[in-house]
Amino acid sequence: MKFKNKVVLITGSSRGIGKVTAIAFAQEGAKVVINYVKNKVAAEKTATEIKNLGGEVLVIQADVASEDDVKRMVEETVKKFGAIDILINNAGIVWDIPVFTKTVEQWERTLRVNLIGAFLCAKYAIPHMENRQGVSITNISSTNGIDTLSPDSTDYDASKAGMISLTKNLSQALAPHIRVNSVAPGWVDTEINKNLPKEFIKSETEKIALGRFGRPEEIAKAVLFLSSEDASFITGSIIVVDGGYK
Ligand SMILES: NC(=O)c1ccc[n+]([C@@H]2O[C@H](COP(=O)([O-])OP(=O)(O)OC[C@H]3O[C@@H](n4cnc5c(N)ncnc54)[C@H](OP(=O)(O)O)[C@@H]3O)[C@@H](O)[C@H]2O)c1
Image (cartoon, rainbow, N blue to C red; front, side, top):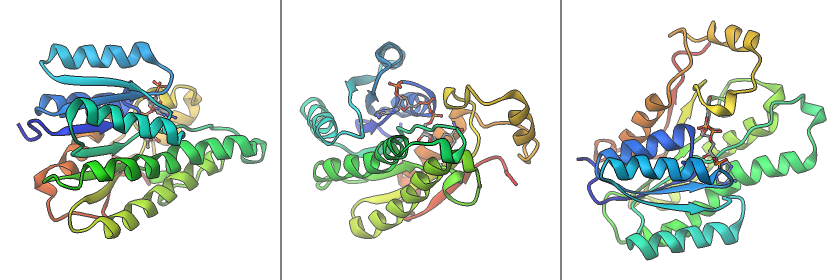
């Protein structure tokens, strides 16, 4: 088991990529914190799945955009499990609407959840990671933060570009003790994409060399690799997992 007794905090792990990543960590022996903002039922279901696998799990409602919530989430994690070994900043939102119909409030919310939320989680988790071995942070960014142009999600793309910059800067600030990396997924089959028009999905799928959207499990594998000792000489890196999107 690669993560026996490691404490892993995964934001936005009630559903989608975060959920599958949490289950994958639990299967490797980790103690897992499931975080959600609204969907208690989904979070409890994920926790039950982990308990049924024999895993240890704690469910915490917290909005990563709120500094008070993040502080409380870290405190509750440390109270239950004693420390934090691995932080996965995964919580994210998107509004796919024409760029100039977006409000300032929507821009601010996107940046607060996707980017400032990742910063806050790192800020409050780091003091509890400092005296541990094999500690790391992995940020789930997106190919939209690198070179995919998508005007309807300009605010999202900016938040993910910011997350990549955050990753690189934190990797320098926290070296040599804490490694910081990012996984940048392309299209993945989760609820975040549930309102995309069928024709758009078809045309986007044609741009993917492997001819399909990714599965959350395929993102989780990259996250577990970066969090493991197999990646002991990797920090400040961005791993693209997009099936060869052009
Ligand atoms: N799917 C893709 O195609 C894709 C591609 C590239 C990058 N990504 C990134 O991968 C990450 C996960 O995406 P996904 O596809 O798994 O999305 P998803 O299925 O929509 O799940 C989003 C998760 O984030 C949580 N969340 C949302 N806002 C939050 C907040 N303010 N505080 C705490 N948790 C919050 C949700 O909790 P509730 O259940 O309570 O709502 C849920 O657990 C995101 O950062 C996304 O940008 C996804």
